Length: 448
Ligand code: TRP
Image (cartoon, rainbow, N blue to C red; front, side, top):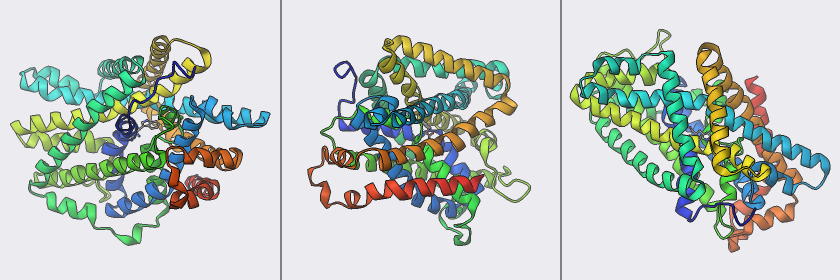
């Protein structure tokens, strides 16, 4: 197995791929939306603290598991286990993560399909196909099915090519495009009337809200979703990194990119809402809170683009292409979790495994689309609010309590000889053992 396994060919390849997984609809849609519905800057502050203090340590646990095991989540966790019950526990945690990734992909593909159809709409308008344009932005069964399938086929196409030729190559192409588009859009929006008021709402915290339980839970969930934790994905990406690399700093860089892009997305979306307001679009719901969720992305922003006239077509196109790219570099990571498992544990050829699993997940998406009213939220809640935190917590327990300490320390040392002088070495092993599981459990129980 060792020889035929793929791997990232360079540091930058890993950074782009892992950041590609992390940066997704969660950053560009979820984060600004949550910020809007949780009182603006107070949420941003809490999110930053939780992302660095809880999500980053948990992220490191998953990367280290994978790099130690050099295999999919189940095999890697089993390599650390010595007793039979530990091996069984390893299976539950690893396989649970893989199922969670598949479930997330099944609803994520639907949302990504919407992004694609909204990206094509301005092109249809530009070419004068107004009816097609209207069809693209109206909720309909056919449109949802067509675009979900289209998006899933793209994901399958990339994953079939493997780690280096698929994941790494496409992440390296798409991530710079994403960052450039995001910055261009921010520069444009910030110059419009009303943007300053938006910046103020985004950056001026109301400290009295910082400890509200709802806000804490949303911020934690958002941080875990954003780093793709608890789904076996970061374990498998960790397993594709060479032992020569300094994993601790790579992990920190990916976290930094992820958090920065979420922050930048807020800098785009919140001011854009206030610009829309200056143009007469309603941005507050009846209870006085900022409009959030899907109406923000699919109503408020499109009205803003419409109000801009011809420029709006290009801005709208740029925005939804941005969303689509972000979704694609994430969806490939979700598919890689189950595919690597099938390839390594059941000796199925990669292309076959990818097609088979990808189509299986698409079938699940179709079921969701057919029952969209109640299934979309249900699957999202089960996988992201329950699945991810529980599995991420079990991974920290695994690293803290089951993995032999000496072997854990030896793995941290790989690629970083002087690590013993760092804060990470002194604090993290203890932190991941006690603080991570406890804090995740507290926040989780609180949310029940
Ligand atoms: N992190 C991505 C986002 O913010 C979503 C994502 C990608 C994901 N891969 C994942 C979430 C695996 C959970 C599991 O949109």
